[in-house]
Every structure is written in structure tokens, then in C-alpha cells.
Amino acid sequence: MMEKQCAKQNKQEEVTERGHWGSKVEFLLAVAGNVVGLGNVWRFPYLCYKNGGGAFLVPYVVFVVTCGVPLFLLETTIGQFSQEGSVTCWRKLCPLAEGIGYGGLLILLYSCMTYIIILSWALLYLVFSFSSQLPWSNCDNYWNTDDCVDFTTRNNSMKWTNKTNSTSASTEFWERRVLAISGGLEELGSIRWEVLLCLIVMWITCYFCIWKGVKSTGKVVYFTATFPYVMLLILLIRGLSLPGALQGVVFYLLPEPSRLTDPQVWMEAGAQIFFSYSVGVGSLTVLGSYNQYNNNCYRDCLWLCLLNSGTSLVAGFAVFSVLGFMAHEQGIPISEVAESGPGLAFIAYPQAVAMMPLPQLWSICFFIMLILLGLDTQFVAMEVVMTSITDMFPTVIRKAGRRECLLLLFCLICFFSQLVMITEGGMYVFQLFDYYACNGFCILFLAVFESLALGWIFGVQRLYDIIKDMTGVRANVFFKVCWLYLTPLVSLVSFIWSLIEYQPLTFNRWYVYPDWAYKLGWMFALSSILLVPVCALYKLGHGTGSLRQRFHHLCQPEPISLLTKVTEAELQHIADEEVQTSTA
Image (cartoon, rainbow, N blue to C red; front, side, top):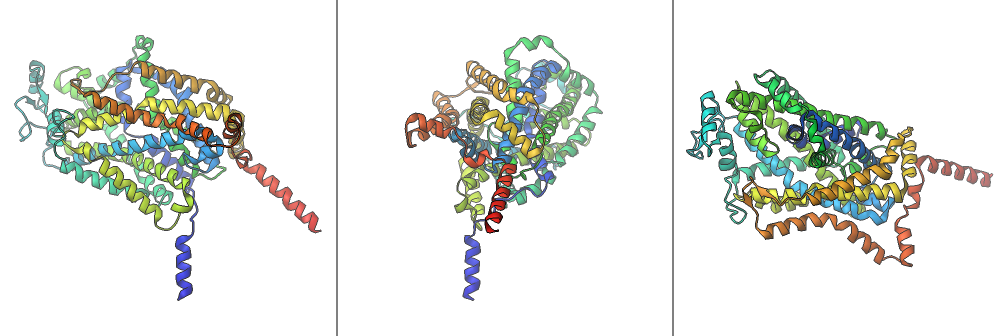
């Protein structure tokens, strides 16, 4: 009996292995689910039409080639090579740059708190989609005002054009029923209990998607990463068959070459790439770290980048064909119905499906697609945070039951911290958090130093040798040029320009935040940026030897990191031969 209790106790105290993906397909689906998210559906199509249609693809491709693909390959490579999380990998490769890992981790933590709010709204809309009549399709509800316009009948389009204060039924449902939005940040009001219930459901779902680590994550992505494509295909076919769809597609892609001279167009293309490709925050590093050492990450990255951009392009056809139909039915220009972000997902598209035959069916399809697109991005981000923390304290956390407890604590902290975002004034908090804490220039800053640290300090030739050793393929020399020059230069220029062109946040173009809110927003933004220099200065100040010796030591990778697995095997073989010789 005592022996069994001791064995059970030893098993509980035993440090478990880190583990790997069950198969290559799990890795591909996990990365695809992470990078293909809401931005592909509700941001890229809008940016494309807004910034010159087909001409926007020129700066988009430039940023894909110079920043997106090189950083995607770079982060996946160092993860697969080091077999470490987004923080501890820097300890092996370039300890001076460890702050990059902490900065990316903090941005992911912020995004975990905002992204899941969107999923909660989508879930609430999905529930309402099962109603006998879609509640945003008419103006006969208690939350509607006298200015409400019902667009399900063609005659009401005249009201829209003649009444300057008119609002659509879908807009009033969103603002007055779902959000019950208050007059400003100072008026938080009460918690929206329906959104709260949906938020609880989403957190429980995400918890059980990753509670066993890659063992559970790898299985869940078989559904969450593939089913959205089925929904997208259904919506694409339906959209293209609607009257007015052709005008929507033409409006989406009609080239306007004159816009290429506008720097803002280029900046928005760059921001879209950094968000859409999930670079700079360590997600790809963690996902790559669960690969087997000899996985061909070089080929995988190229195909995954192609999938990501291809999905964005196809999603544009699905979205703008429906917006073209809505504009055709209302008899107004498409520019008046085209929206981005929540405006597209919760106002424009629901309004469009309300005008179709069988509106409940298409509404259900759309919101299921939206939830699944966002769900795997959310739980993969959570997995990245969990893995990175676990790799920092492996002997403490990698024991039976401790990961599950840590994950529960993480979920509860995020949940209670974001309750303020689901109050009547919560949308103002949400926008403030999203605009500053998860801002593109924070990611650009990290990307600059990431490419400099790995390209110049760790060494681009080492990276090339690592890729050759892991995959058996020598990477194109163009990646060497990117990692040394193009990627850091383009990222730096984009970072500086985003600061120059900074505009204070406003809500719905009329609400101006109080000064203290802007200061709070900048505190969130700087919290991730300042971790890079602060961490570097801390390490320089607490080392041994002269400042020059400390700096040199912190720029050196761990000795084991300099050896490829092939070299280690060769050294082991030589050592075994020497032992055999001495024995003989």
C-alpha cells in the first residue's frame, strides 16, 4: 500500500515532457487557424476598396515579400530549432534581446482580453439568428427610435436619402440592444448580462480547447481551422449569385493607380500584413517549437503565407458581393454601405442578410464562420501565453494538474479584468484598449529589433545553416537580404511613419476621449515597447565583468545552440568510438 502511494506521489511530482504535435497536419492547421482570422474577412476587403482597389495589392505584395514571409519563416525557424517558448528561445539565441519575448507576450495578453469580446458579440448574434424574424430586420422593437429605417423593403431607401438623422434597423439593434451604449467613457453603466453569459461560454470553450496543451489543441484545430472555409465557400457562392454582386466585386478590385502615391496606403498595407501574419509577438515561435526538429518549416511557411493572403482575397469577393447586393436593393452607392471591423460584422452584413430569402440560414452561416475564425486565433494566443510561461518555469508547472490550474487562473484574471468592457460604456473602453494596447506600431517596434537581433547579432549565416540542417533545403538568398536590410528598414520606416501620422482615438467620429484616457492608452502602448530596452539594461547592469564583457556575453548564444543536431550526432559518434577504442 505504501509503495503504491509513493509511486502515485512520485508520478505527481514528475516533470512531464514538453511534447510535440501529433502530426504535421496539426501544426499546419494550428498555424492556419491562428493567422487566418477576423482581419482576413472584415479588414482586408475594406482596406482594398478604400485604398485603390486592385492597386492596393501592389503595396500589399511588397510588404508580404519584404516583411510578412521573411518574419514568418524567421520566427517559425527559431521556434523549431530552439524547442522553446517566445521568451526562453531568446535566452538560447540572444539573451540581450529577451525583452522582445516579454513585449510580444504582453501584447498577446492584451489581445486575449479584447478578441474574445468580439466572439461574445458574434455568439449573441448567432443566438438571435434562430429567431422567427431577425430582430435587426425591422423597426418594430422596443429599442427602436422614430428615426429607424427598415431596409427590407425597397421603398424605405428613399427615407434613408431624405432623412439626415435616419439610422438603419441593424445599427439600432447593435448600438441600442446589444451594447446599450452610453454617452461616453464616464458613463459605464451596468453590465450587459446577455453579453456576459456569451463571454462565459467563450472562455469555457477556449479553456477546454487547450487545457491539455498541444494534445488537445492539435485535435480541436481539425474542426476550427477547416470548417470556416466551408462556410466561406457557401457564403461566396450565395453572394456571387445575388443581383448587384458584380458591381460589388468591381468596386472591390477596380484599380485606382493614383492612390499608390499616398504614403497612408502603404502604411495601411504594412499594418495589415503584421496583423494578418501574426508576426512579432511570438505566436509562430511557440507553434514552431512543437515541431519535430527535421520538419520542413521552409516549405510549410511559404504555403501558409500563400493560404493567408489567398483567404483574404477570396473573403473580399464574399463580402463585397453581398454589399453590392445591399447597395443594389437600396439604390445607393456601395461606398455608403462599405464598412470595416465591427461595423461590417455587426451592422452592414446582418443588414444585408436580412434582405435575402431565408435570412436566418445565411445569418447562422455567417456568424458560425465568424466565431470559428476567431476562436482558434483566440485559443492559440492563449496557448502561446501558457507555453511561454511554462517554459520559463518548467520544473514548477510541468507537473500533473498544475498546467490546468494555471490556465484556469489565467482565464479568470482575463475574465474579471475585461468585465468593464461589457458594460453600457464598455465599447469606449474596448476601443481604447484595442487602439493603444494592441496597436500596430508596438508590433512594428518589436519586429525591428527582432530582425536586427537575429540577422546581425545571432547571425544570418547561422540561420541559413540551421534551416539547411533542419530541412535539407538551403533557403533562397533573398531571405538573407531581407533579414539583414529590407525587413528592419521597412519595419523601422513604418514605425516612424505611424508615429508621425498618429491621430488621437475618437469613437464614431464624434466622441472625443478625455485627456486621462489618452494618457492611459499610451501607458498601455509603451508597456510592451519599453520592455525591450528595460530588459536589456537590467541584464547589462546585473552581469559580471566589465560593461563591454557583459555586452559581448549577452550577444552570444548558448554553446549548445551553436551546434546543429547533425553536428551533435557526429560528436556523439566520435565520443562513442573513442570510448570503444580505450576499452579495447
